[in-house]
Amino acid sequence: MTDLLTKQQYQALADELTLPAKAFINGKFVDAVDGGTMPSINPATGKVIAEIAACNHKDVDIAVANAKAVFERGDWAGLHPSDRKQAILKFARLIEENATELAVTEALEAGKPIHECVKTDLPETVHCLQWHGEATDKLYQQLSPSGDDKLGMIVREPLGVVGCVLPWNFPLMMAAWKLGPALACGNSVIIKPAESTSMTTLRLAELAIEAGIPAGVFNVLPGLGPDVGEPLGLHPDVQIVAFTGSTATGKRFLEYSAQSNMKRIVLECGGKSPSVVLSDAENLDSVAENIAAAALWNMGQNCTANSRIIIYKDLKTELTGKIIEKMADWQTGDPMDPQFMLGAIINRAQYDKILTYIETGINEGATLLVGGAPIKLGDGLFIAPTLFDQVTPDMTIAVEEIFGPVFCLMEAESDEHALELANQSCYGLQASLYTANVKKAHIYARKLQAGTVSVNCFSEGDISTPFGGFKQSGFGGRDNSLQAHDQYSEVKTVWLDLAD
Ligand SMILES: NC(=O)C1=CN([C@@H]2O[C@H](COP(=O)(O)OP(=O)(O)OC[C@H]3O[C@@H](n4cnc5c(N)ncnc54)[C@H](O)[C@@H]3O)[C@@H](O)[C@H]2O)C=CC1
Ligand code: BAL
Image (cartoon, rainbow, N blue to C red):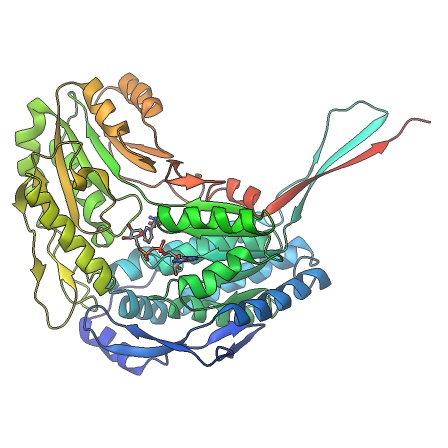
């Protein structure tokens, strides 16, 4: 995909951009009904870059009513699957054609490094939509093995209005993870982006119209969680909410569902993922490189951030030295400068929260090995990559999701002990396992309580593999792969008696 430009070129593009700031309902940009706005702040500079429409329950009611009408008319759900496929593929192409602009917008509002936006977020967003678009006309329905005198047809139908409530850490990618399968199945979608990162999702909605996806099929309602997320969760005409974010807010959606129409709730929530280094791990340089990347990628603002590094005791000293060396590859700086792999922390609240965790780690007796302080770059919110040693499983920094560039080293007495420590968490999203023994890899991968286990690497899998969590990391379904289609469609049995 796109080659990297220079910092000056990205900055010039950023200065020229017209940033989308209104809600997108029924194919048009509109103000919030009550005229509310909220500032969008570039976390790398502290500057307000736009005033974004702040919607509330009135906008939700309008968007849901439109989306429901569009669904019932069959504007999208009634199209031939090949036509839906073509529109989704064109949508993906348009995103690709506008990738630089979208990457710059994402870097501006989220403080993400432009390098990552260009090389990871945009290509994966495009690929995700292509993949689900391609699947649209390749999924067959089923017949049951019910004998010659009966016909049991098992068919799939779209649900209707899908609500998506999204986080700020991967705004485009998370939108694509939900949109791809939801649109492929024929639903109408309403996205509530995180309040810090509305703009790239708004631009996607505009591109969807250009791609021929009918008005009202894809709507975007920026706003605060309680003002937009809650009314979506409580709305009787929303059939599912697909959510990615904190476990605390995820649990609220289960309550909204129970209080309203028992809508489906699919949750992809927090994590405290481990890197587990067993006694026979080899190639410690590569292990260290993976560990640093897994902890620091996206400033550690990642649901699968490997923030607990559990190392067999005899390898710990050598591996610690190598991890510290590899941390040097993760330099923090201006998100518009493609030489930096780390940018700003999303907002003041998250920044303060991370610094408080660092303080708590020190107060509870952990040893600070690297970092531990803000990086002063103008008025931006930057925190140095931080590594703690001598961390015990009861310490706050070993238990709670920090969602920042902070990770802990823990020592295991044996491989069994490493496994025990790894599973000692209320979360279970992902785990990275390092071992040279293929048999042990299989056994331990099955024993780790996590939705994804990557062996001798850090990975979340790819678009073809299901992504979601065990325990309090997930509920109700999976993102990615064809399994994602399950959550956005209803299964119906049509039973015909063929006997005379
Ligand atoms: N698993 C993940 O990918 C993410 C985890 N987090 C975790 O959550 C912590 C807090 O970050 P937040 O941005 O506050 O996460 P959050 O879970 O509160 O926000 C996620 C989404 O939920 C919405 N929301 C918030 N309160 C709501 C409510 N009462 N009803 C309905 N919707 C609501 C937000 O507006 C946003 O769109 C982070 O420090 C991190 O630990 C945050 C973002 C992503
Ligand atoms: N890493 C992709 C999913 C997430 O962070 O929420």
